[in-house]
Every structure is written in C-alpha cells, then in structure tokens.
Image 1: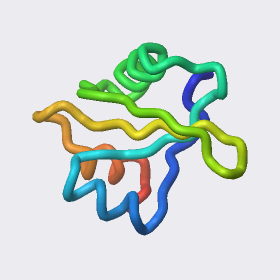
Image 2 (image 1 turned 30 degrees about the horizontal axis):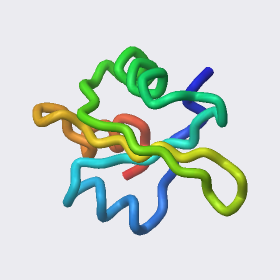
Image 3 (image 1 turned 135 degrees about the vertical axis):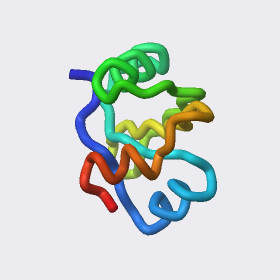
Image 4 (image 1 turned 120 degrees about the vertical axis):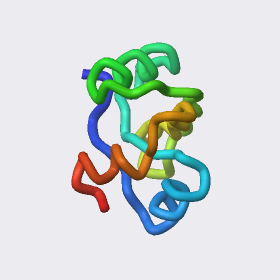
Length: 82
C-alpha cells in the first residue's frame, strides 16, 4: 500500500483551509505519480500536485494539493481529522 496514513499537525490544519492541501505519510519507495494515482483511487478525489519530502524521523511525507472542485476540508472531515 502506497499511502500509510494522513499526517496531521497544527500547521497542516491551517494549510487545509488556506491552501486546499493535506499531508500523508507514504511508503519510502513511492513515486509522485504512484501517490497521486493511489489517492485518486482510494479517496475518489482529483489531485492537482504532489510534493514529497523525507522527515527528520526518516519517513516520507507527501504534501498533496487538491484540484479546484475537491475540498481538502471535506476530505479531512471524511477521514475524521477535523
């Protein structure tokens, strides 16, 4: 499974409303196209962009911006994050 779990912090909560963005922990070997495809299939959303980074804990994190009609706030509510 490419997507491990949503990653929620106080900063991410602010990004949900301001940037229409969510963060997810992903498999270390996952590529950006694989992450995009997995999110679109798993949550039935459209993804505009995916940025990745390695955290100081050695985990890979994906910063996902939703496409215009898809709301990060709505997805976060469906996932029980808000």
